[in-house]
Amino acid sequence: MMSSEQPVPYPFPRPSALGVPAEVQDLRDRPVIPVVLPSGDRAMLVTRYEDVRSVLTDLRVSRNLNRPDAARMTSNNKMFQDERMDPDPPEHTRVRRLVMKAFTATMVENLRPKVQEIADELVTKMANGPCPADVSEAVAFPLSIRVICDLLGVPAEDQDRFRGWTDRFLSTGRYSGPEIGAAMAEISAYMGRLIETRRAHPGDDLISALTQVHEDDDTRLSEYELHWWCRLLLLVGYETTAGQIGYTVAKVLAHPDQLARLRADLSLVPSAVEEVLRWKLLNGSLSMLRYVTEDIEVGGVTVPKGTSVIPALESANWDENVFSCPHEFDVARAFNHHLTFSVGPHFCIGASLARLELQIVLETLLRRFPGLRLAVPADELGRSEGTLIGGLLQIPVEW
Image (cartoon, rainbow, N blue to C red):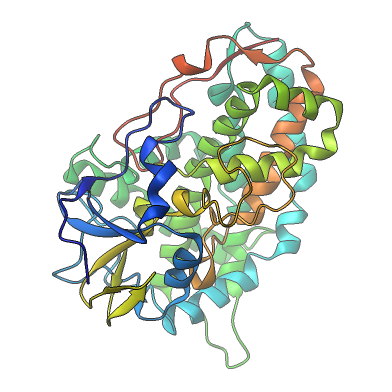
């Protein structure tokens, strides 16, 4: 049976910008716990690794929140929800398959020289500028927006416009509903014009590829699907990666012993990135909100039809039955099958691109700045509030 206990607020408050909420450390004692969201709606939090994996792959657990009794993430809007887009299989599978035909691993890997070139340029500019410098503004945000815009085919002169649009789209309280709606209308109009330009004059970019992609039966993305995915890839691919880049640098610099291991052996950079990903999950797992369409069992507890659930990735990534000493930050962790990019039909389509950017930025900074360090104590770093990402406000570093 479901618990009748009082729900606790979610996302959980962090003790510091880099700290893990105290609640995460002992969540696995119960397979599900009741929580209340920023919208005031209630949901059940799934806490254990195997249960989270099961929920994420269970076809009885829907991502479609366009239901009158489904919980909302925020009071202003339902992020990532669109009544004209079916977020569940089989329709989601069809659309995702078409997108993946354009957004291939080869396309991402071919970006490596370009990403390295951008990273080198930004780090050189940072080295020649004032010290201390803010890694977020000097490297993380400009690199991530230039990479995603280059991938999509957005002209360089238009790239600065997207930060304001993204801030509003991902707001959980900073902006009003009308402000969010106005930003979305602006970016939708812009993307519409860009798609028409790329359709008439195709280039070597993702938007051009998406306008051409089809399956053997000539099934293509509809015009609406094309616009929706282009907009989503731009908005989410930029802000989330920028936040993660900043957090990665700060987390590594806040652990001198692990930083020394990385400096001595840069081949550990990929495993260090995976370890930071295990620790860092946006602003909790709010965006993972789901709706149960039939009774399911989670860890021996029956979760009834009509319940809103959140697979708590941050809790699954600390499951003691899966990760050895999960509370330790270990850049050489051997077994690290974290769930930060989700699993199943909604596995993050941009995971390979995010990993590429994170690895290149971290290695470039460590290679160029042997003395790189935080310019303030780690516990003085601040977090951005009122946004789904919950990234760091500033990351002042010196060298």
